[in-house]
Image (cartoon, rainbow, N blue to C red; front, top):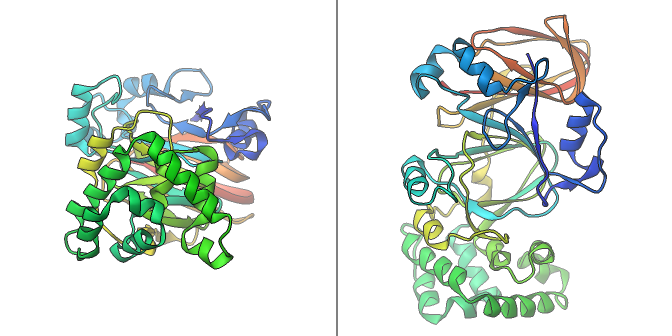
Length: 400
């Protein structure tokens, strides 16, 4: 069954046909792309903020599933309850400028926040995420190793003066076994410093970077900080690279972001899958609400090397790599099938949604697919894909 996804035109997205989101939408619907409009995300799921529809009828997929619960699969109904919907939200993102530094709550905190502030936190679900790069993809992810954070405090006097001597003294004597208490102090001081003071320190830092030689610029991530400042001048989040790992994914590489993991996407295209939620707790690089107290209280403060943030997929067969995070809500399969080949998509214990990123072919010999095709497949259904031109396809399903 073919679906039509929902496009989100957030300001941070790539504009016009430079956006893979716009190209995917145009590929299936022959839509005219507005070159002056940002195309940030393509949503494929049942979340009310961007619901998918059945292409043949225009019916909401959520309504169709209420009438066809068996298509979800017995394990989904058992795990997520009767009258269940898809437990995951599947997306394609095209990122031109940095997104906010953020984290997502676990289920207990999500329920509490939704109860207290339903206008801000609009559901009670957690939101672990998996991002798989489609192009070179930059992100901030997790706290840097403690030694790196300490070194930045030495190398960036503008940051050091904000944190202050007392906390810096605690930080310098801190070992890597129990970093939470002091790192939380550092972050709270930084994020609660008055905006005008942050603006002055950043202005001084940006000015100083212009006179640095290339080696010095590289050592303090000048290019990244300047890019953040270009889009969010004076924003406290521009200091984020001194606390959080900077990672660059190659196509096919992935990040898994569990609850309480600080992160920010910087640039590039990716496929993203998450629990069906839109709960975001922000701290910087955004004009939106910064819930500093909640964020600082909830973070994991695990200091790890950048390379450890990569999430490895497992080769399922010659065409398929499977990414299975440690949550029941979702998993993602990545298919790369050369022209002229035939591949069987294994039956899953849950319904799934697939999107064709590039190439052409047929499914079960009677359904033409090409760039932008979005397909719903019911639980326990096996599909045969015959490829005309090299095909890249992603399939999301519940990890039950």
